[in-house]
Length: 193
Image (tube, rainbow, N blue to C red):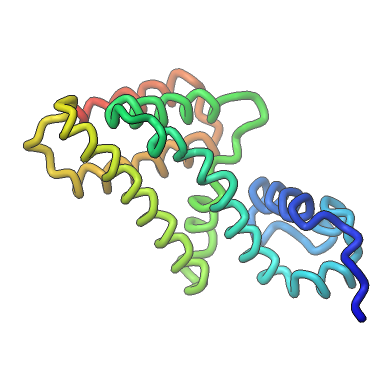
């Protein structure tokens, strides 16, 4: 009979997520993961496999936890235009907050690994498509509500917003100040007019 796990898996995934999010996959060492998760190497390998397997679990965890939070307003606010505006403005605001210059783990991963790792390229592509679909749903609501012109190409605008959202995350990662993020956001949102 196997022994029950002596650790909280969600806590381990949160801690691993934070180190990967801050340092990236390549710069994160096994020792970093041991130090941040509190697991010893044997427990980590037995529970999660190698570093790449743990990273893939972290990406799934991030998608379910952080991405779901980031896009919650797009799903939950009935006014489609207001949902889009709030999503961008909140992201610009939190992106420049002290200590928050991490950007988006999915975007960071796409930049770091997708060019040479097909498995993470697929995950990054799927994350972009999910964002595009979420923006498209909010845009369709806004068109139906009359707050965005029915002449807008919803698919193209959804792709633009998803790509711009990634750009906002990258600007945050590089440490853009609040004024820069706000200018960028205002210019993006002007596309809704």
